[in-house]
Length: 82
Image 1 (cartoon, helix red, strand yellow):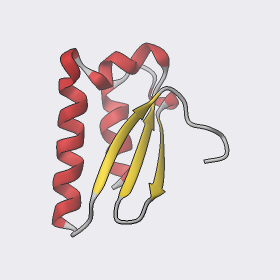
Image 2: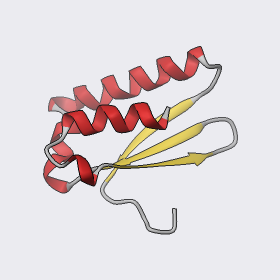
Image 3: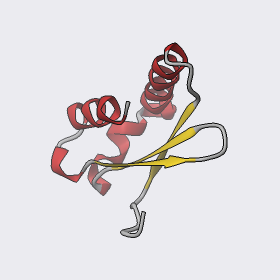
Image 4: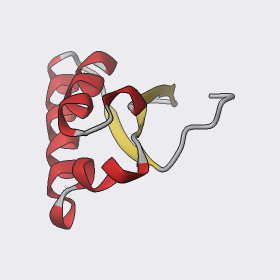
């Protein structure tokens, strides 16, 4: 699933080399933290958050088919220790 999120993000942004996704396991779900270049942040969020909402909907749909629970967080930067 991480590969799907990376694929989607890289196809939305102008700087695909700056796309980073960290997968964090929590108690009952997986959290994907997505980070892109500052200039591309608007492209993955979209007007009124529409693109971000669609990305989250798609990821939840794929996860549900696999019997999993996921969420997607769009963050400014991913810490090196993660």
